[in-house]
Image 1 (cartoon, rainbow, N blue to C red):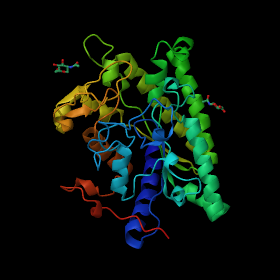
Image 2: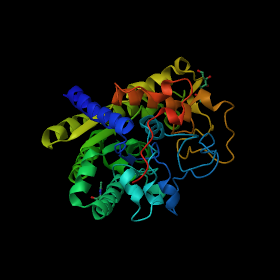
Image 3: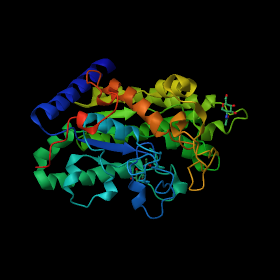
Image 4: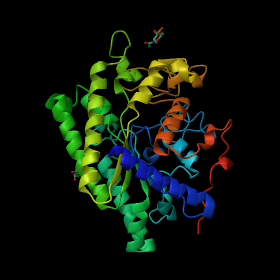
Length: 369
Ligand SMILES: *[C@@H]1O[C@H](CO)[C@@H](O)[C@H](O)[C@H]1NC(C)=O
Ligand SMILES: *[C@@H]1O[C@H](CO)[C@@H](O)[C@H](O)[C@H]1NC(C)=O
């Protein structure tokens, strides 16, 4: 079942991509939802948000070397996938004007600190929760409708590709924080039920707004991120946290299967990257890395853990899997994006498999018309 869906989705995407390069039809349009792993700068526009990365040394390896609101030293996995698809990485929703034509070309709604639950990350004061992000997409669709009419807007939304990566903060910045209510109120199983039933409603809402092709990016081994390792005496992965993560992934996968059966033309795909991330952490040298148990910024604390302007950076940022106590480095994102891309598009050549990735190797998005 999952394989059949994957092939169908991949075929649709390959078709879209082939037409992009051959007849300059519309490039793939992507709408991106998520947390700090996928954010490209929405929180810069939330005045009181404490989940920020708009200061050094974030972005030190991004083109231009400036902080953009990405929670890494360079590119996110989404940036790299976009490069490979030959499209621009979709801009942050909050950077666009209300009636921006850019809304038609793909938008990123992701926000650092966000979770499936509203109260996840509440100590960051401001962030776009997943519900908020879906509301923003609803507004996006209304604008698109006004611009191109209802039928075309529905078609546009049906054909777009939706990337979702959410859930890490529901653990790291909610359930695993003993001083928050959710940690005291729920057992791990009850908490998982709450997450899955909430996600069920959220995906249904996206479907009702026209989403048909959804890729849900599963969680990585959260027990192995530096901020969690810190909590063990020996600096090892927290087994219990990894088990919860695996259970979450397996429940989401089941949920997507159910939704595919229940909702006509739904093509929801689970991208399981847990094993790839764990392999990178367990065997860093096999990928050209040296360190995977601490962060390049050297900010491993169990709360906080973001890189700071006065952090003393590691000498070679390409040798570290983790940039700060939560987020992979640009180099790690490159490795993970390659795997993610070949999983999603098994038959597409990967432009950056060539010695030096050059932007012109990828199909160019057609000029606006
Ligand atoms: C979040 O809050 C909004 C109202 O502010 C509510 O409609 C929604 O159901 C809540 N979602 C969750 C996941 O609690
Ligand atoms: C990381 O692993 C290395 C090599 O095994 C070890 O020497 C070092 O103490 C570990 N660092 C942390 C923060 O656990």
